[in-house]
Image (cartoon, rainbow, N blue to C red; front, side, top):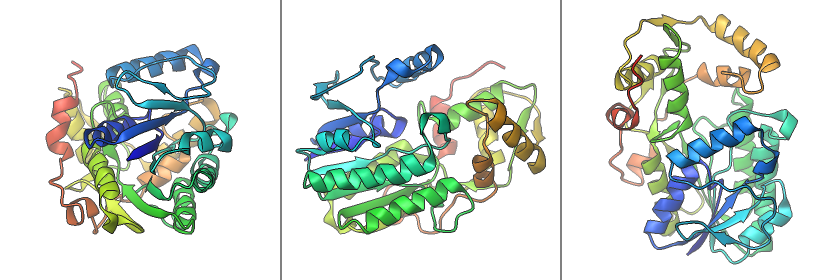
Length: 328
């Protein structure tokens, strides 16, 4: 099959492209690559992240036709808020894997949950219908539901509803937090572990089910290869539920850090989030993230294990393999 992957330059996107290529699929990557508008700091950060992940870095403004990257995948520059670019990218493909999502808003750039998660999916569905593409694997998030306390999860619910009502042949995957070499989740924890003189723990009792990026990519590949997964919604999680404090201790151990842990009261975290949103362009934590941190992100119906039959990789076992010692 020829498969379009949206959000292909991201952490999950790169790993998904690699996994689907291994099955012999032809890959077309949709990347939001308008980096001429980025600050120097953002360009440097992108360069470092992509270099670490084996990616590539290009400054470009317009791509009227696909180009090939160094591993032979077609590259389309586009934007899920630009219907025309999506129609071009979807033309001639057999299926779409939709991975675009944000965990933090940047309203000044138009990157809001409603724009990216909801309007983006509206555009993608329209583009797929225009190009006569009927098969969609849509990656959502564990915890998504209509009356979720966080705006993030509510916007994901709206997107899922659009997909389900679209008439397309869909599979919706809801992964818990995804980990692996180069992931943003672990990187943020490493900064908390290696930076301050004590290790701050907020929401320490909240349970998460970290899932390996390899396992998520495998679920995506299996969803495309077997028609029994059409019109299904699956929770995807790792093999164990860990508290935030347990995860922090695993990261600290893997990084070779020996510092005392300090529990941070919820009110202090909320106050920091409220102030940080007003002061920083990229605050350490947002109010919506604080809300998400206040509830467990686990499932009793783990399709990665029960439906896809995977022998799941655990964060406890895998973290020491990709977390470098920080010597602090």
